[in-house]
Length: 110
Length: 113
Image 1 (cartoon, chains in turn orange, purple):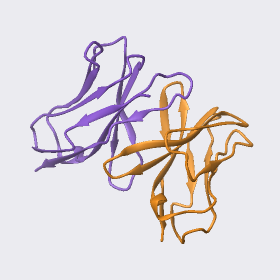
Image 2 (cartoon, helix red, strand yellow; image 1 turned 180 degrees about the vertical axis):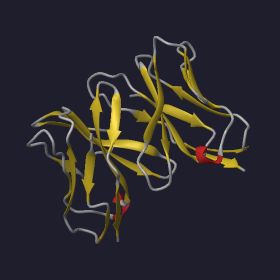
Image 3 (cartoon, chains in turn brown, cyan; image 1 turned 90 degrees about the vertical axis):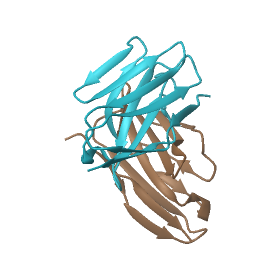
Image 4 (tube, one colour; image 1 turned 60 degrees about the vertical axis):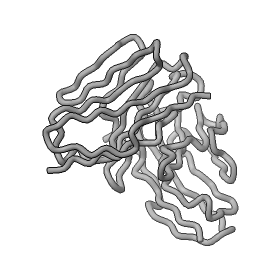
C-alpha cells in the first residue's frame, strides 16, 4: 500500500528545544515536500526536495531545516522552535502532478 | 509567484442543494488545478483535478470548470449530502521545477440535513 508516514503525530514542546519530525514514503518518489497549515491561510510550502541531497526553500522556510540523505526520508528540523511555529504540518510526495499527503503532525510550542 | 484566492470562506447549504466554490489564480503559466477535501483532523484528499487543456471535468456529483482566459476555476457539488461537510481547498501548479501547489485559503462547507 502506498504510504506517507509522519512521526510524531502530536507534539507539545517548549520554546528553544530542538525537535525533528520524520517523514517517510514507500512509493520511491523523487519529490518530497513539507507544508504547514494554519487557519485561514491554507497550506504553505516550507521546503521541498527534488531528489537525494537536493533541497530548496519554499514559501515559508524561516526557522526550519530539512535533509534528504536517502530517497524515502525527508525529516523536518526545528532547531529552536518558537510559538509562531505552532501549526499542523504535512509531508507530501508527488507523482507527476498528484500530491500524496502524510497524516499530519500537530505541533504546539509553548 | 503564484497567488490563489478562494471564495467563499464558509458556505452553508441544505441537503440536496448545490454548492459552488470559486478560485482565481494569478500566474498564467499554471496548468494543473486540483481540489482537495479535508475532514476534521485528517489529511487533504484529492477529489478532482483538471489540467489547462480541458474546460470541464465531472466525476459523479462533483465537477470542476476552468476558464483560462479569466484565470478562474470552480468546484460544483450537486445533490449535497451531510458527508460532504468538510473544508475544501483549491490549488494551482505549474507542474515543473518546484512542482509545488499553491493553495487557496479554504472553504468550510456545511451541509444541513
